[in-house]
Image (cartoon, rainbow, N blue to C red):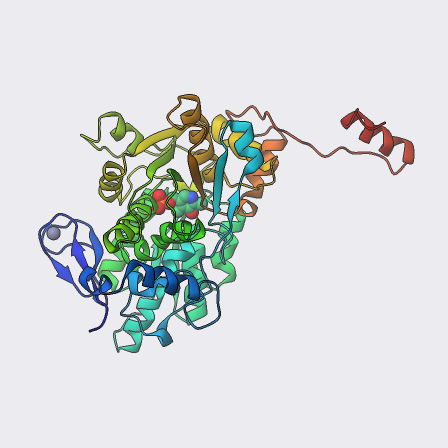
Length: 444
Ligand SMILES: *Cc1c(COP(=O)(O)O)cnc(C)c1O
Ligand SMILES: [Zn+2]
């Protein structure tokens, strides 16, 4: 009996569709879909079998299982044939023991999951490999899909463009004009995608891309397409695997469209259902104060949820006021004893810079998560002995403008407490020596 997974409506209305059907929302009630797995089939193997199998495949070369997403293929998307997998060796990212940063903040056991150490520099690769593989599978089955499109705050478009280029599938990306970093803008351009720079924000791009896709048979790659969540949920499995199948106490993730928060929870719940773990971590979603609809909902005990108009924030990838996956994220936060907290521009920029002084090079979104960590430690909601994992969502090198402007004190609403400007000196021994001695007074 083969492994099986299908789309199912999250509202409980019982609608189901095959994974190779072009469908993003329930046709009956319009709610989001999620991928469900045949649990009985997965439970025919012991938890030990799965752990051993995943460990044997991890970062090896047997196609496509060396990818940490496809190494867990039975839990992710069993229907794609291996020859149609479009993989750039995603996952397997460093789980960084932030010993010095932890000590500064009063934690013994702080870890940063470096999801930005990835092919296109963000965690979006984890989901995009699954979506583009399914598109390739559908094309090879004879379906007509002329192109794949997404709206993006910069990282989804980079991932879509790269995976489509690797597969030879046309890609169209909708970007809000002047709201993504240079590195994020050049990625889809370099990969040959049709790059639309549109005079609106992400929420505006999202409305347009939905309409274009639905009316023109173009495949939609945004995270309302729950295939992406399936790939992204492997981050939870991978973290537990990296801790030799032990579950950490707390995980903090920055949230914008909230697909990643939903994915994180989904991975843990699946492992629990299969018996591979027997506890769940606490999940904390960290939002920018300039784009905080989930935080505002949290303050009402999730009784209401209202979209907001997202304001400009340094954490541009989470500048989203109308997040598509809010229901899924709220379900996860309820099941995981969740917390939502927010960070101001000053807090996120300084937290990111402080982390950098301990050897990291963190993006502004990781800064949001770190700033929230600092708040929760101060409020004693996180204790000194707890094992905490912060999800770093992108590589800091994508955000060099943010870094330079921080150190040059050019960021609005930010007082840089860790600024470290280059010291200009003439090419003379004495000048160089005195510059060094000014900095390190203790050198004899
Ligand atoms: C996409 C993204 C996020 C937010 O993830 P959501 O699933 O939209 O909540 C955070 N950080 C970075 C760097 C991203 O690219
Ligand atoms: Zn439904």
